[in-house]
Image (cartoon, rainbow over all chains, first blue to last red; front, side, top):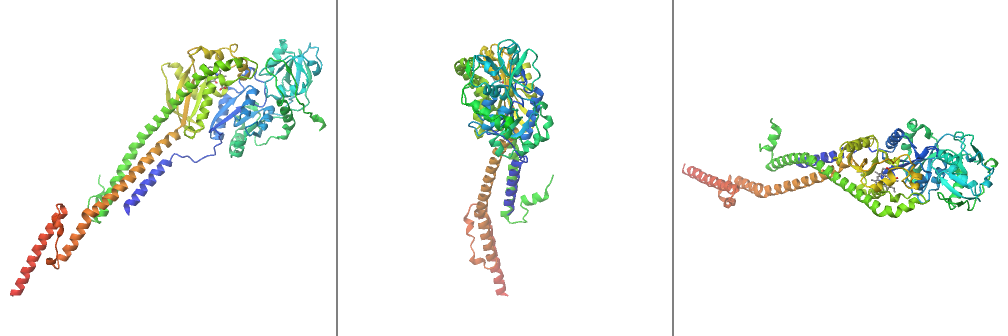
Length: 306
Length: 314
């Protein structure tokens, strides 16, 4: 019957017009909330003073766009200056992906409660990074044992060279107080101003000058940082996302040191991961409070004897 | 303009059975009216869908203002002393943090999945809230025209066009300035978390940012197309029903009696005396036709009788 055919045709036209706006579906990589929440600490920590511009406005905008294009998802890019803040975000599973330095990458692998993260790309150049302790040149303290009763300056919890390694190496000491700053530069200023007796330092930083002296240096080489993805994203189809990032690596901030197409070597982190976990199991110092560095200490074989 | 084919179909030209002619005419009329209705409704539903989304967005922003208010009034006094202490900064005291957190819970519901909410600022505390170039433009418009309360429209993004609704964020309370004026007034723990280089220097009554709700245009169109499709489907169902009923009525009222009359007329052409057009008692056009046939039958019978008589005489 002709009119039935006409009705069928009309229905077909209507349903076609309803679908017309569906674009060819592209692979989207989103977190649980339908957004991609990306944390950004960078490959190194404690460099930017006062938390200033972990990312410049221009880099921030460019990176947000690149991540949006790569994931086909709305991106919330959160640059943070404080490793402590990053640690909490990772612990609460509030980031789906993050650009992290080594210490936080090690923490991310543990993933307390949220299923953890996987390392997918290395960040940063292999550098001269080593955890050091600096005292004023005039200080009478010559060995770490003499730091009993000292005022210690650290980066916030979450930093490897600025928090975990110094505390690990000061195990057994009682400190008069512990103070935090967001950058090594600020710690150095406070050391010079006589507000602190000893500060954490990173050997990769420019020479601090003749008025301060190296007290001790940790022997562990600091591995590079990593881009990490949450387990949920790793389980999803994340290859297209990484491909876009790899192809556009030149658009990422140059200081980030993103290495395209390479998987990070997680076992390089193994040793420091043990340190991080060990220190995390202690009661940790609060800003301005006295602190006895105490807890069960894991003995590591020195790296050069392995 | 003339459409000979259409005219041939619709105006009874007698090429096809009545039932078919009617069916064709009806479907043509129905198809045309559905098409016109759909075109008009498309516009109407588009406006309605956008309206609904604007309403919802406004509601979200009001709800978020309420959450902010609650945090400033009820939560901050309790949490603020903790932030002065040696512990880590508790963002639960921050109005913006609670608003964005509450929204993220809302967003977990499928109905609100498409919506996103941001509090973008020119000089934000959390760099995540840094206004992009588009948002900066919106904030500048609010700053230049203090009477402007809402801006809505479309914006292009790498994910396709988005519909947005934005409102200004103005610092109306002195209490905000504790954390947003100078670093030395802010809690020490806040400085250790966010640093001291951004999110400061805000002034009372300054417009510092914008609340902005965005929804993909696609979602607006989808909502519209869903209503449109349902309505069109209802139209089609109604018209098919009307078509079927018309068909039955046509059959009962006209076609059946006409076939009956036609059969009797055929019979009457041979033996007029035995045939009776009972439909002549009806008051409608069928009755009229039956009466005409009855008269014709009687004339025929008389003529045949006369013919017979004449043949008998000769």
